[in-house]
Image 1 (cartoon, rainbow, N blue to C red):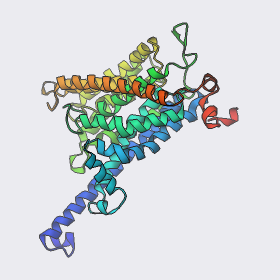
Image 2: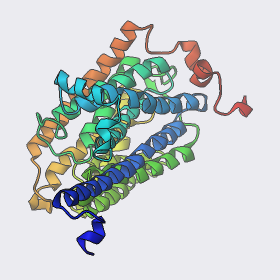
Image 3: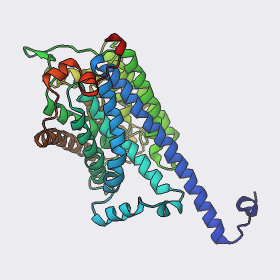
Image 4: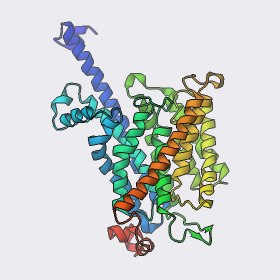
Length: 414
């Protein structure tokens, strides 16, 4: 096709360059919006996965926490979080605030900067919503909203700033967020869980008492919804059409399979650990999905899946009441995935070689300390400045659906 046909009446070089730039911007905007929408769909997956794993008297409440993560995250990431991922300079914030009250700054590049903001937002909201499953059935909604706003507006963006997506203060490889998103969310949850304490009746005379979820098929459906969204999460992390990778799609798929298989075997065919293991495999592969071989991805997934029931039961014995197993599915799976990226990413084991194992281990240690420490501080701090982060014993026994929302998830059963 001739240049004149491609660009109409544009015959001078400036017009051609402008047309090419507009076309490239449009492609990248479409890419970020479509793949971002896939990641956004993961909020639905979390709602279903967590909703199925809680007792029926708390279904509405845990789903409301997932909805609220998105609503609050849109605002906190707009005003604070987006800029904080790349800068601590006050002038950067004032410049951004000056832009968002007008359209003029966003029309020249097809809104590419806003598409980038949207793609960052869906990742931030994912980090926050991970915590909702761990603190389910006993945390006040208003306290959770405060925690969610701080996570999406400050704690997640600040960790991105010190990691490979920001200023590279810590140099480690994390292509799609095994550490930056999932391990961070999982260990923030651990800190909040410790601050809250276990549910009433969860431990009797020091022995754990099972409190099974009310709808396992719902939880299993949520895991597969998450899996679909994960292709946006991992493949979309190329951030541009011309950088998209089939290797990432393949390693994501094989780690998913490995995670489910590993958990199935380690848990002796448990119908809840298995889908959670599938998710753990997806979490683990995020870090090295672009630098490891397909077979390595399968192995990484298996290891991540096997550890899910083991870590969950270990924490249970320690008196840590993680309702939906988010610490093992996201926290330790993310850490394991990041470290294994440093192993299988080496050329010796078929990887691309663009990784340093020592740096991966250091970064994993940092996220454990950062996440758990700030999660505990967040829980204690919110409780100190408010009337506590936990509902009353009477409200907990009644169920948070009625206590906080005046509506059961299954009103006909009432």
